[in-house]
Image (cartoon, rainbow, N blue to C red; front, side, top):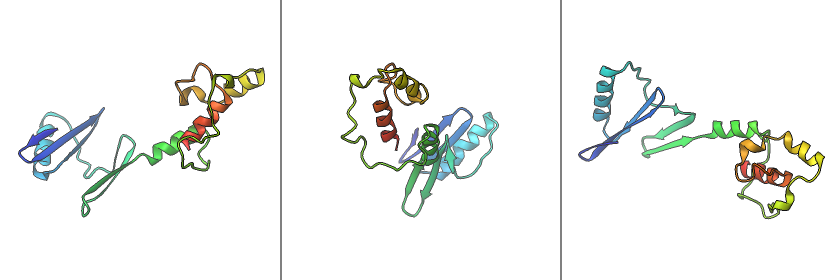
Length: 141
């Protein structure tokens, strides 16, 4: 971020995507002009999305919102709970997690071998259980 008197200009860079933002349009355009002298660039106008986030703004209210709704749906679909009922609490009281819930039978180990447990959790990755998987699905919803 570059501060210019009472205004500011930010340059956000991710791989080959560049996003400029600031409080002074003249300074933003000046920065883009300077960058285009050094780099091949294409100005796509006001940003609508970046790195998977949807950008919406209300200039009248002076608000800017970022949404990762598409990404969240992609994650839920990956874990096959895209159509699940959403939850209002982070973790329900009945989902108590303990070491005793570790798989004990071949059937339990077989069940857990078919769910994408490892990509959803880290703390209990070496010791999966159905109860922990249910808790993870609750959190995701």
